[in-house]
Image (cartoon, rainbow, N blue to C red):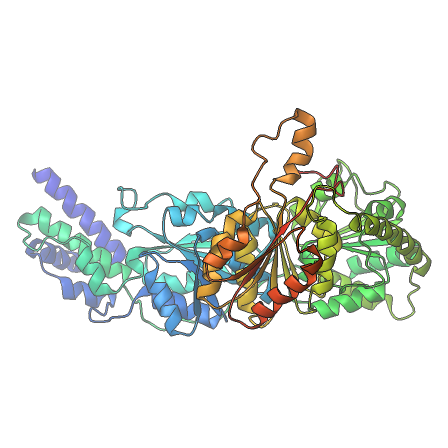
Length: 639
């Protein structure tokens, strides 16, 4: 027993020596005397600089940093672990938008990050609250969206002891995030959140995760009450345990309210070197058939979309746009091609991959001509070199900001640059031929009594106002929409990106409408994908953020059925029903209508009414379109 007591004294002595920066044996002896007497609360408070009477809490520190970083909203699903953050943020004027599923909160933060070209923020509770976000966080990682995920956690002393919703959250998010951190002292909150936001926005952007145990977010008095002191401690061991707990909570709150800088830390973005720009300039000058492929990364700051457009026009190359770059050149720009990318790449003598990656979307690089010079621009080295040497080889490869590189190339070319007008004209003629062929399919009548989806999508395109933001969430119907429905300007198209995630619709629309409350936001849904987030119509109604949903309802997971049925002669698990999704929206406080063969001629009128309802600011709208099947996308990859 004596040996045990000696060990306890040594352990407590070492902790005190470390935590209180004790540097003499006399100081240590005095502290140990306090342990044996069961006293020392106020001595510890003074030593750790703890304000015992303060009603402030860690949530205020989190909120103050977010406010200083111009965060305007946090998307959440509530939980006791994170309540102090939400309350403090609301008091500072940060809008709290609560959703019906945690994955929606992260998708919404992702959309905000893209549209504001800044940081998006989501906060969820511990355990299942965080595990529900994993798909959206991975999607943000692959889409290169800078977002901060804030997660609650069990109290620090109960970590690994079976507390409610206590799991190892850090191990889940390390592979998904650029930066992960667990905060265990209040004075570490501010620097940790600042560092996390810096990491999210620097280099190649991406998600970051900060974990907050519940006892670093609530006020001192409440944490002390809940920590488990024995009010009737007798004997050295019980008193020592009380003293240890007192040391622990005092250390947590040590110097919590001393002033700290909360403003943004400088971010780091890779920039091209002048000699690299000159290499590209020489290739552009000598090219007769250049092709420019622009991906999502080109829309990242610091270059504004309008400046990027000027650079593209100065280059004069035929352009193919993908991801967030869709809409960059407006609806009908003469340089933009849509239908003949494979032909253009086959004949090109210079191919510029401006944020476009040689993954499945370019057949891993196999669609690039072996005779073409290739320039690759990307902030991410892994994406820059993906499948290189296996299926393609670059002549110039630059790890740098895409838009900055293009702007510098355009400036270096100068006004006397000879643009490849004949090549543009050739591709334009081929593109127009493909458009004409598609037009014939658009006008075909369906034999099964349902609407031709291509014809309806043409009607939708014609009905879109110029300020519309489009959210793409689906497989076959959305794949067709990508050919027919045209975003009107930069940052007016949101799709999941390379991960191919279904279920982004409700969250992306919520984020877009939060950023642009006066603009119409359309979700283009397949009937399969709408099931993931249709419940968010309740969120749209509660927060008065009306959106317009368009459901292409063919009662099938058609993207999969196109291959599964002919290959295996089975429709197992791909059949759905002609569900009245508009009635679901109505039950959640929205306007809804179905378009079928009986009112097909009124499709434009229904779409205009849906827009009017949304413009009024009173209700969301959902248009349930009963469509048939076409062979428009036969052979498209669905896996």
